[in-house]
Amino acid sequence: MVKVDVGHAAMVTSTGLVGLKPGAERFAREPAKKSSSFIDGVMALLERTEYRRCESGEDREEIFHLRYRSYRAHGFVPEAEQQIVKDDLDDLPNCYNFAVYIDKRLVSTVRLHQIDRENPLGPVTKGFGDVMSPLIEQGDSCINPSMLAADPDLAREYRALPYVSLRLVIAAYEYFRSTYCACLIRQEHTAFYRRIFGARQMSPERAYPPISIPLMLFGGVCAREFGPIVERFPFFLSTRSEQRMLFERTASGISAPLTILPTAKYLQHAA
Image (cartoon, rainbow, N blue to C red):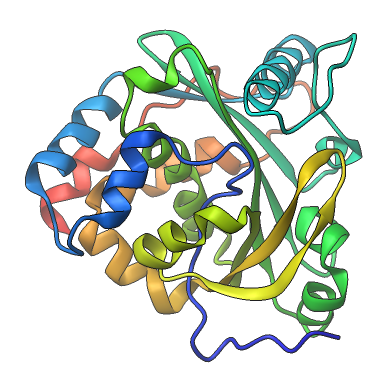
């Protein structure tokens, strides 16, 4: 078993499977202070953003296809006749697949698993079970982002798209109150996650099929880092109402909200 240093661990909020957009890489090299123009830009983009939890066959197929297009553009998956990327983890009861729309266009998708004793499966326990499963078995929980993908034809139009997409991870923590956030990222993106989210490596990189490149486990303790993250980036704020619409399971026969609008603007000045 690999020893996890949680004493200096912190929150990470992306799978990194697709990788950072060119604009996001620049943010990682900028001084660690609030940039009002950057924050205003993200807040303005949120005004044009809608989230959708994808539970129906048609919605799921659309994001599975987007994953394939994005990952093929980066050379992460082999060519496939069906042109979709999905796995058995998409069908788990603790899985939440989201589509992100800007100006009514599907631009990105991200998948979240809330892992706990009742629902112990997710990408990090599948690929790094020797590290994560003991934490879950002792009663801790983990929010696990994965399958982050962006439309390769549209992503460059939206420099702040990673922040808009990964805002869902912090909203998930606020709703579930997870102990940890952990995910799988590429070696070349570790500097970004350390700089922006204070993330720490929890295990050496490993193969994770069907992704063609090795991934490493990054993450840490949510509660320790969320305050500074949200203070620095108030666009990560969300109301309890938004969190419920994003993550609350509806009763049988009752449809989930078609789209959910970000609520950060209502909380920005109170942060």
